[in-house]
Image (cartoon, rainbow, N blue to C red; front, side, top):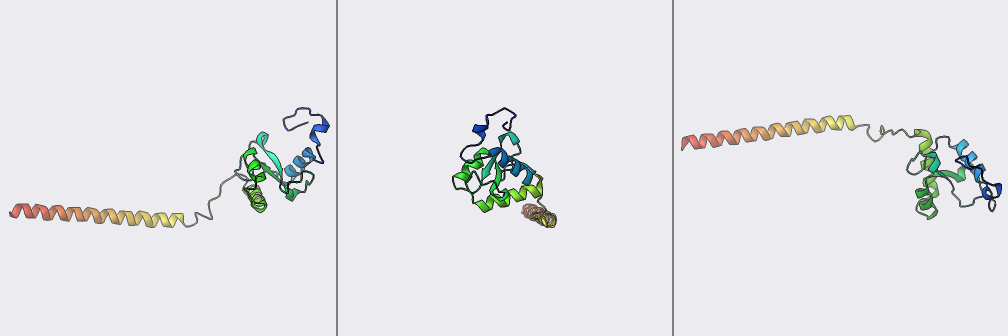
Length: 144
C-alpha cells in the first residue's frame, strides 16, 4: 500500500534494495512532526523521504529526512549540505512548526521605545524650528 492508501504490488515498492515503506516508518517514528526539513511544508501527501547518503538501502534514522519534492531535488543536486538538513530537521521537531522569535527579538521592545522617543524628540525639535522661523519671518515683515 502506498502513502495514499492505494494497493501497489510488492515488487514496485522494493527496488534494488530499496524498502521505501520501511524508510517511511522509521522516518515517521524518529521525526513525528512531519514537514519538509527545509521549508516546513506540512502537506504530508507531498512529502518524500530523502536518504541523505543517497543509499536507498540505508534506512538509519540519521540518514532519513522528510523533504518536499522541490527541496529533495535541490538536495540531490548538492545545493544543501547533509549537516544543514539534519540541523533543520531537528529544529522542526523542537518548534513543531510554531515560530519563536524570542531570541532574535529579545531587546526589540526597549529598542522600539528608544526609537519612538527619539522620533518624538525630533518631531518636537522640527516643530520648534518651524515656529521660530515663522516668528522671525513675521517680526521681519512687521518691522519693514
